[in-house]
Length: 268
Length: 268
Image 1 (cartoon, chains in turn brown, purple):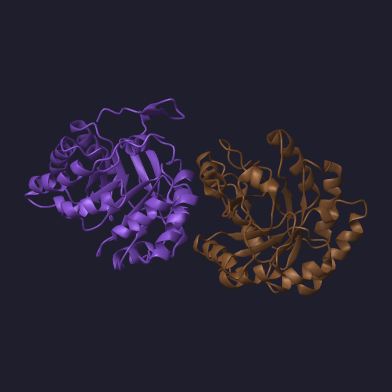
Image 2 (tube, helix red, strand yellow):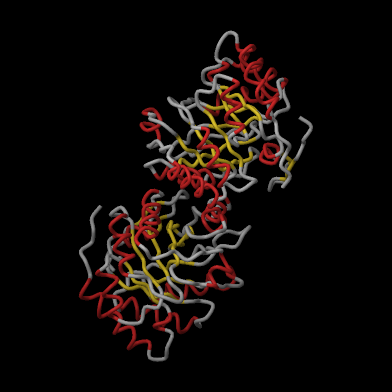
């Protein structure tokens, strides 16, 4: 990565502008490491490998976590010691505490679950996070419109998330909302099924050009990556695909698609 | 007012819970004083009169303001010296500064302009206000879904507000959004036309019972107040109706409707 866009925080400290970095490196896959499942030694090895393979960032994410503030600083530091690509936290919030964040990370994703039944997960968790002062620390917040497709009892039990239908009208309505609210990105996800590439097309057509489109869930093959990138996704995200002993081979296979699809940076 | 619900802030200071107070005094009119148009002596006189007439709160609001921090503390203090009813600030935000607030006020309304073209006025102004620490001061924030009906060039120029159509489908869509996001209240407004009582009915039917419905714009007669209260509005707001030399007569006339309509408190 040659881009070294930086921005000045309120305290005068200079940090990387992860959003600008992501806007200039569209058309990639990004791997997700679960720090509460993957040992730090393995995470470090993978972080080096994915950066080498050309991924422009590393996501650190989990649905469940414990002792976040105790575990994460050393974990993030270890990962950052082997690669210059930005680390992005992506964890669910906890009522009363907001989204967890550690200053060692470059960025923190703040998902608004637009399909949730619970206002806390829809947007009040973001207000709370800013209220607690965690929206203006050294980890840059990324405002994400997060949509879950397909039946997902785990997300429903945890965060009241009702699955979004993949019919044109439902998808278009959420895409319009994503644009109107000016989210930095949309994050389309399916735990048990698949995000339809047509849903990506609808989002891409209706979002503003500077808004980023992430798609995730069950990505295992270069053909899938290719289909999502063709459909307008900026980043195709996978976790489980590299949670296997032969992850190096899987990584090489999954990265083969992005090399063909990589698009020119969009200059804003 | 006999209700003296209070809540404890993070700093341990006790303040009035204005939201709980408003939930237990539904079915009233509320007057708006513009501190940047009305001399403080007149505001004080009116504040005493509206409290005497049974209004459960006083709104302090203006579309334009200058030297807010210099003007408002003394103004709010003067008003509060003559009445125990809560003072609620209702002013537009300024990019980089968020919603203006002074600790002398009991509450501050934070409107999300769901019909705006500009994400700042849709919701980012609220994030900014919390980020600046102004969401957890002694003035209690009220999260408001603010909708503007009818052509309004002034609101459009100032805050990108596109008028909402008063057809059933448009109104229902915004009412559903108000419920899903868990706003404390909906604030329906028309500067140049009128909010349709049918729009109030749709909001009331679709919002959660604890959510409050405010309606405002061109209210001049007790018949209008009556129609809005009948249609499910919890509070009917007026400003201009009392901006006349014979405002005491106008006040008596406008308060005649609420005496007939006043509903029992809804216990939650």
